[in-house]
Image (cartoon, rainbow, N blue to C red; front, side, top):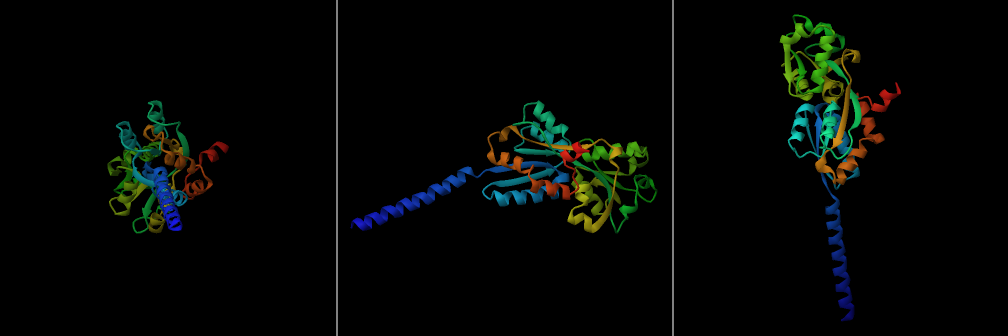
Length: 266
């Protein structure tokens, strides 16, 4: 009888241990809501996949859009835990307003390119001056009012004194990903898009690109912050640290981003 009681007691203890372990795991599992500039779409998707392999209990959701619009949303208390901006000035403004859990961290410099599907134009043979030709009637750029890549596209066109020649041909995307879609779907013959998108498997199969000299526009210095709402979110802190890891940095470089320390070393 005593033996049966002991066995039952051990079984209860075992079940209790399993239950407590499950509760402990659930307690440490956290969700991260990331808002990221659309130029990060392919690189960030890979980074998140790698991060989740090492942190399977943490849930990560990413929303992509234009940096300026996300900035406004966070000012209006949008539920984002991390904000990756194609223009570092946006997270810096949030930091100055006390809306972040720490300092703004630079993570990359972006580049802009001329891109077109091979079926329409061979962008590898184009130069910026060529888009003013009469046979090119629709040119896609991101909206310069709130998209950093659109602003740099405008700067490059103005540097070459082409803005007024091509302004009536411009088709504006809400963000750089939508800008690329306009060209992919034939709503524009050529676009000024992010190098990171042109290097993706999807776009590189469809067409080629010409790298626009960075001397024609101000640097696309990019940065991120942990928002104030995620101050105690340990998963957000882990993801922030992971962005600086060798694994994440290799992915960024593969998509054409220049790392901040590489620029400093030049």
